[in-house]
Image (cartoon, rainbow, N blue to C red):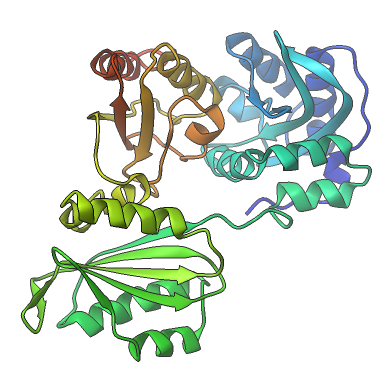
Length: 366
């Protein structure tokens, strides 16, 4: 979890250029004892490789892998520029978040920031904020709506359907979605059979999310198979799109796919359509800003709708043409990304993406 103190927030700053903004942030990172003085050169070098503008008025300048030895401790500094700075051609940044990271810790920071900053309203509030607490609350998610969460419980050693439901409920409780009363209510409920071995249980909870639990051996409930238990924890209406996808999967005869390794991705994306390919990321430091931006650039060269899911992460399928969404997947070296393209040039798109990934996304093959 990103933690910020008031002294990390630089309100109402005014500088002439992007380089001046980076120098300001690097200086503050140095003063805070997070980096050595030379770290600014790495931040400027990163910008020369590829601008770190994310969109929605937000930039995230940070150093190169070659300057990580200058980082004493992972941390951030946030500078607000109410009048804006041209970060890249035609791209105006109102908030710049200077990041110092010793290793891949910055991917976790980026993931949290991109989920928060993907909200256009939040970005406007950051621009107009007049106090540090407002910026802290926005960046740490205190004022942001909670996103739907997803958890997987694979190969759970259950003897029957009720034990599988208990495992899913305990998983949700351990994640802080609900309490013991929620678990008790679920165990007293009667899950609905959706078909094709898929069961659905539902409970009111503090956090909207889904748990997909699969048994380690074949189970039956009476005459019906138990291939997977879907647990819906509902705190608001954020779960409605996934319910619609369930209906579509049922209509397409694809419910059974939920019991596979990509079940959560299917829940979020709905019935499979178009073409798909899975590629493994070879970049030593995962999809940080530069390779992430290169991936998005390649995806944007094609007209097809292209979505990507991190099979070694949450499984959530997002637009491959959004840098915020791609970085938000928290992709590390060795993670498998499933791309699904739908459109006239879908085949060419998947081929181009595969070649770009194999070539290292601008960082060279390894």
